[in-house]
Length: 564
Image (cartoon, rainbow, N blue to C red; front, side):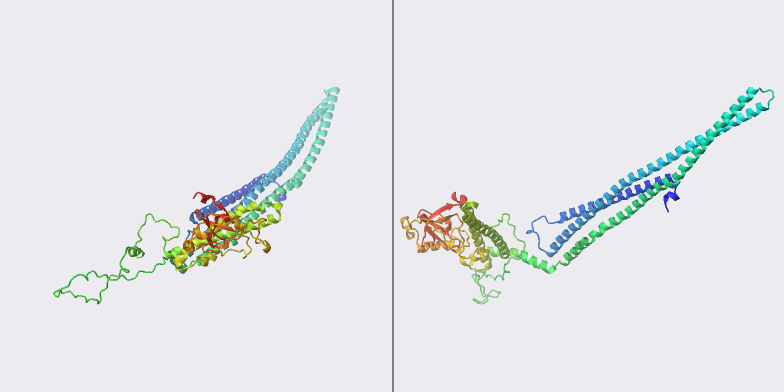
């Protein structure tokens, strides 16, 4: 069924219907817009909710309980879920609402064009009808005038008293009126034929085509609505798999809650490492009291069942201070956080020390990698001088090596405290490899200046001209310190901080006890300055320490150590 044939006379109703169709489409577009605004608001509120309950502290300070971790996982999944709601809103706005509004504008323009064509066709038909009607009225008037002239002529022609001139005049007048009526008749017939033709074209060609265009437009509008209905649902369907994964993640997080693991974490977090206090012995202070026979009290025989006060087990202040394990811990308003964490219980102190050692080891590894990179760059510059000056890298290499030594010193110090907590007695040599565990430099491949080379023949470089050590002033180490004095200073486990670095100008055999063997161009770390006796205390990269003649080395002190 087509509108052109079935509704040929319903132009006004079709005008109203097509306007209603566009209004309905825009109403649906408004519905989609409000829906996507709801989605945007919902997603924003979900994100704000997640942000509100997300941990604001660092990860190290956050509890490691499985219930907390599961809750944070649920928050992450909820945040992803909110992101999918934003995707729904975005696609609804672009694929549905935006498309509907653009299509609505196109429909309005097309409808306006078709209606204008229909009105023009109707106006043209009305104009043809007016021409035909005017010619019809004219023909009617001319016929009436001709009839009057015919009656007047017949009357005069039958009147015997009428003169011949009067009769001739009436006859001529009848002729004119009759001729005019014939012309009006012909004009009327032509206009009528033209109008009938235009009317047939109007109702059989023009109007059916216009109404067909309006029908096609309305049907396309209906199809577009169906497509947007489907797009509206497809937007939701596309995010369903991801939303399902978010929900599955929440279920998985819920299954990950482990009460035994949480209990173990509580023990690990708060375990002090102290042993429960033993029984306190009875301290008998009545031994020095004299007893008489008349006393009804049962006297305690001497040396039988009498527990003498044992100073080792007496209630001391230390024991009293440990009673907080079973009661309320006394408040210490000014409890400082010591560097060795000695203010913490043994178990907590061990964990904190181990964590610090791990952190320092990572920093040390970074410095080692930087040193190796600088040494390789230095070797490249030495082989290709046009690329850069090798000596320009030496200050940075020295600074990096000093930082490495400081980090090794810190690691060694913390390992000493850790060994103390764990009850281990380890020497400096036993602990030194643990600080160097991340070193990857092959043995014997590091040059005296700390540079790395792939050519074994270039491991030891000597300057073109080597001064004679005998011509230099060499203090006698025996005049400065006795060997046992050196050993006493080295007995301390805590390494001395690095004050600077020095480069050996000459070789030194270091045969006396407390002295340090060095070769020419060796780079050493200064840990104690010359006190006026001609000796400087230094440390090798391997950790070996000792005294070297001050005149045998070229010293470069750190800026922050010169003023100390």
